[in-house]
Image 1 (cartoon, one colour):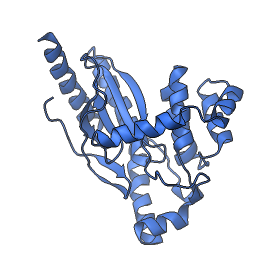
Image 2 (image 1 turned 180 degrees about the vertical axis):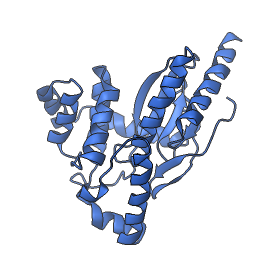
Image 3 (image 1 turned 45 degrees about the horizontal axis):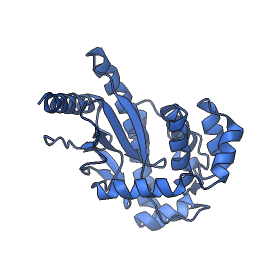
Image 4 (image 1 turned 135 degrees about the vertical axis):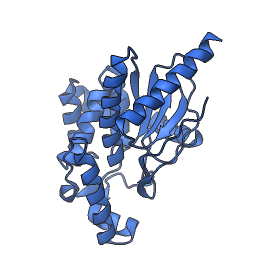
Length: 249
C-alpha cells in the first residue's frame, strides 16, 4: 500500500511522545472501510485520538464514505502487577522524576482540552494492569457496543479518575454502554479471552506497532498518533481510494 505515515502524538512503553509507524495487522478483504485501532485504555493519546477520529468520520461521512471501527489491545505496561501500582510513584520512577511526570501530564491535559476533554491526571491514584479492560472491550464487541464501552472506560480513567483495573469499575463502564452488569461481572471473573488478548497484543507488536494509538485500514497500517481530524480524514480518504482501486484490479 502507498506509504501513509503522518506524524502524531503517541504512547509507547517508555511514555508518550511524537510518532511511530505501523505495518500490517491481519489484512482484510480490500474494501477500504474497516478501521482497526490498536490502543491501551491508559493511553491518553488514544482517547484524544478517538475524538479526532470521530471528527474525521463526520467529514468523511459527508463525502459518502462510511467506516466500521474496531478496537484492538496493546499493553503499555505488559509486566504490570495484576493489582496495579501507585501512579505517582510509578511515573516518577518511569520518567525520572515527579517534576518530569507532571510536565508530561500538563502537556496531555492541554491537548485533551483542545478536543473538548477535561483530563484530571492529578486525581488518578493507581496505574492499573489493563488486561481485563482489554478483555471487556473484546466482550463488548461481541455485544455490538465496543466503541461505547471504550468511551466509558476512557472516561472512567482519565476524567473520573477511577481504577479501571477493578472489575466493579469495568462492569459499571459496560453497563453505561448498555451491557448487563451481572453478565459482565461473571465474564471478568473467568479467564475467558485472556490468552486471546495477550496473543492479539503480541500480534500487534509483530505487525510493527511500537506505540499507540495505531490506525489500520483493512489491516494495512496507515499512521500512529492522535493526529488532527483533517489529517486523519485525508489518510483514510487516500487509503480507501488505494484499496478500492486495488480491488478493482
